[in-house]
Amino acid sequence: MSLEELIHNCKKGDRKAQELLYRAYATTLFGICLKYSKSKTQAEDTLHDSFMTIYEKIGQFKNTGSFEGWMKRITVNTALQKYRKEEYLNVVSENTEEEVTVDDAFSDISLQSLLGFIQELPNKYRATFNLYVLDGYTHKEISELLGTSIGTSKSNLARARALLKEKIETKLTQSIISVLIIISTHFL
Image 1 (tube, rainbow, N blue to C red):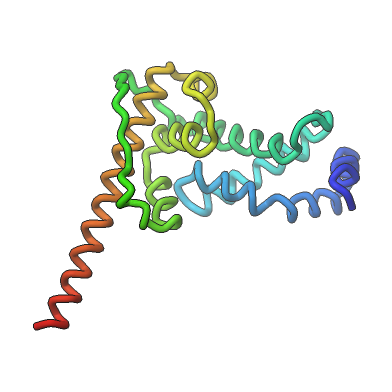
Image 2: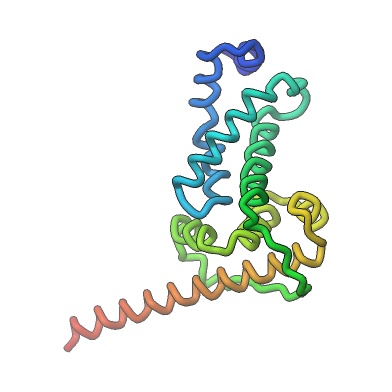
């Protein structure tokens, strides 16, 4: 079944087509959900809610632009709505333009570890970091999505980067210490 046929059948409420759509895109959309969630369980809930919205609003898709992009946008918005409802995204009044960069030495951190560090960020920082760094939104767009100021978006991004840098440095330091202990036990 082609994508156009799948979309057409989903618009008619065909359960089999909805299942095929889920199977085709669940992995991709789950990756997005993980970026905005603190846990796998929370990501699974967001994925479920996202697909419910996709099925409900698929009639609004006009076959212009990327269908996958349309679904990704719904997924991001679903995750952000969950945070707003649970009052996770509190406004931070301080503004900072400070840019924190992660050195090339940190490029050895595994993707799994980095995702774990991102999931450990406070919700407002995680959402801003994901929207800006991973999804390519501007600070203006982020401020509109999250209901904050542009300065707050910049501040939250700087804090997220600083926290990630600190977590990465700590992990690397612990790894170096572990290697030194192993080396010293073999040579003593």
